[in-house]
Length: 530
Image 1 (tube, rainbow, N blue to C red):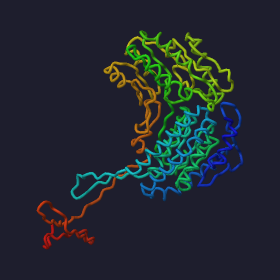
Image 2 (cartoon, rainbow, N blue to C red):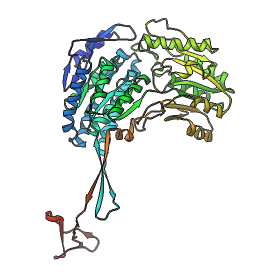
Image 3 (cartoon, rainbow, N blue to C red):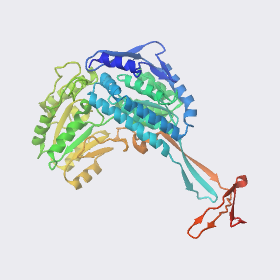
């Protein structure tokens, strides 16, 4: 399937767009500058898109700020209906959207279509959660007083999304923000902006009003500086590199705005010698090589107990040989290219460092003969926790195997990192699974399972893996302000009408006198006050 034929079909369908979105208008960069979006599988240029910066971002913020006053007052049911329509449009266009993800990100087409379905699932979930943002009434310690706890949308949200899951991460952030009544300025990765433009176009078609969702892309540092400098932006949500996260935190702190940060993690996968070898190999293969290892929850370090190490290494290496590397549009391809040349060079340096320090190359370890940014699925044995491949996020198709002897040693190695997003345990021992999972310093722990995140459960991490939560009803709270109001009660006078029947009591008359909040009721024709 040629890239140009995919683009032509998109242009005919009206989904393919190459401009930013500010205040409901498709916009070029004010200075006319553009950047190129490439297909990582072939290197060809897919499109030129605006290289936006601070001026465009400031206008997008102003547009979102103006729209917030009206969007926040739209009923929850109406917001829910808009999100449902957006969900339906994503599903209706899942084939084209999947092709667009493969085109600019490189992942196999079947994985890309699954991502579209997952992205739509976030909208489905938050469309329903929009109707369940409840307030509370709390008894006061003072007589004749009540405390009202009210949840209100935080305001304008700056959302920064990564290139590895360019659509799923978009709806994971924008979905709950819009559901709560917030407006959004979205900055997608400059590597994968086309799917964000397409999704934003479908959002407008779904009835989400102009200005509620704005999309700017191009000069990332300038865009992020504008988001952090503006007092109108009351919430920043970010998924991406740790280096960017550490710049966002101080900037957000200057105005004390809410932040949600998720820079990924250095996930350990612990394989005990009592595990079901077949289950472990199949699950770890999926979690390690999904999206060519370019995921934030990918198993970076595979810790294998010495009693099963040799068997596991042999079985796992054999399973890896079955992975088919190729262009994401090629039938049967399970491993696409890495996102760019810099990613390949990073992987190469990690492999070279490990081998120079005594690790054994069991499989792969070099660029694929397809060229470009394709890299062979690789397995490296006898890795230790002092090698760079154990200390850094790999973000590539490299499986690093480490030996351990005891449960205590495995826990120590697993927790020896500054990042704690996801971890995995494989064992048949129920007591051990609970014991180990409770001491692992990670937000997500999978037991005998690899792909664990779901929209219904919150995603959060330990240590330098970020702040806040995303997904689930817990994630909704990140876009809400909780406000307490005290109210002094007047004496309420009520009268109740009770009509007797042989089998039941029924309400006969109920008259409300609004003046002075008097309630009157007639009981069998006799007026009384209670």
